[in-house]
Length: 214
Image (cartoon, rainbow, N blue to C red; front, top):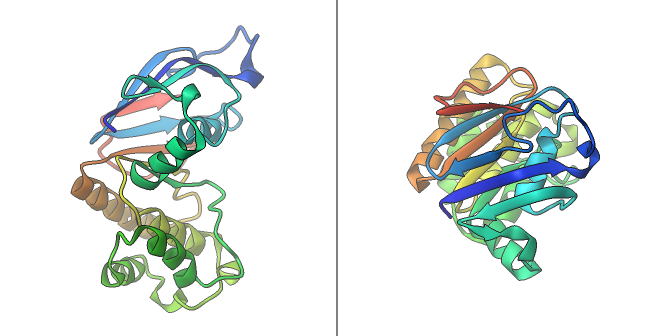
């Protein structure tokens, strides 16, 4: 997939508002593969909704979203399954890890489905992010910042044209934030993919080519 286009898209909950000022809502916006984007937003302006709409998780919006010129409103379950398996990787704001499983098990579930990353590379990422000692720790007993790092590794265990990261460093220090950025961009470059990051304040430092204000 090369392009994601939003045409006059607006969450249904915002319909009727006359004070809407946004670089994305009710605009014609294009995200292109291989480029880096930052979406800055205030809380409650639809940041996580944007990710959910593009990912096909929610459909409560007006306007259009197009993938390479195709309207996603016509996609069936099988089409969405293919897109999520081969084209989109997503780091959810709420992470969606399994608390009763270990960090390694959470990542391995994804990688067994895709067979995409080698164990050596995954363990290298754990080491780079300073959580090697948490490999066998249950996620539910880890700090949120540690969980964010596990969730990133899991998100990278698949092929993708676009990587979505929703507030990925909200609970990380500057050192781990920088390392997360290095890992993300290296993997995106390896796959020729784009990155769309969101933030309501602290954002991951990347060489963004375009910044949108939601």
